[in-house]
Image (cartoon, rainbow, N blue to C red; front, top):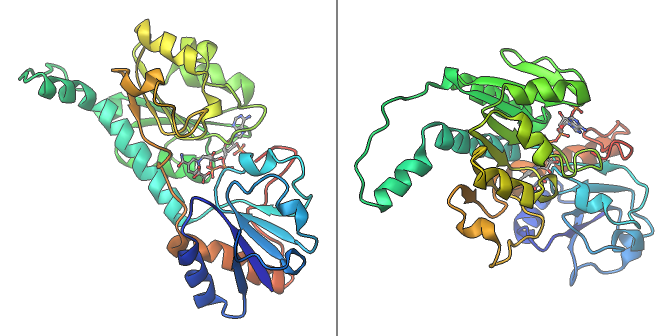
Length: 310
Ligand code: NDP
Ligand code: OXD
């Protein structure tokens, strides 16, 4: 049984070690130098493989995504029509929840304002302090990541709502769904967090029309994909004062070009696509579990529905 590891971003050696520790019989090959004969590869574990690579593996049976988002894989028109398993693993979930809580709290507690005042050597208090239970946070996407972040924000006493494609029930979280649920969800959201998959339905969802439905002074946090956001619309909404700030982890072009206005915008916080990172030590179980299920003739879990696009 041979598995091809394909990623220019992840630590191949960590994956080889973790996979071999659990499945010593698995022949783990690392693309490009260690691929060997393409006709011997049964499984691929991949993040942004070059277009056409997976189609060139004639015996390939299953594709495991190293990422939760599979938009880059699905963008390859030659992607073989095989089971595609997306990454759902505790490290990714916990990492994203930490990121969301950090940045929600940062805006909630006016950290950017106090950082600017420190730089200016200015000792100036705010006379009114909001409590978390007075702050309405809205999460676009209530999947593996969004639902965990929603629960953690709830535990911090934020007033949390979420929006999904199908109806959901989450204890203590107000839930909205579908096109008709979006407007009421946005109207009650002070801090908006995007954790949607990138699909034809969600591309450019963070645009001027959506921002206009948020209350004045709202903040946007995008930790999903750069193509969810219409960048010019965000700049316009920030500069007009309608939006108070944005935290962006993902961008249409990554790395973010040096001349991009986001780098120096006083209301924008940037992180370099690090909200949550798949790491072998926590994620290996998901791949090993999938391989064991296959060996036992059981159905795979976390399969991507290609029609839905996630
Ligand atoms: P899931 O597939 O588990 O959840 C997706 C959620 O989005 C579901 O609740 C789904 O609704 C909802 N959704 C999808 N399409 C629509 C739509 N058209 N309208 C309304 N709701 C919709 O994904 P994950 O939570 O695992 O991951 C979300 C995304 O986060 C990934 O696709 C990836 O792009 C991004 N990500 C970013 C990282 C980073 O470091 N910045 C790290 C990891 C992931 P329903 O429940 O009804 O299906
Ligand atoms: C992912 C990511 O989708 O890291 O997992 O962006």
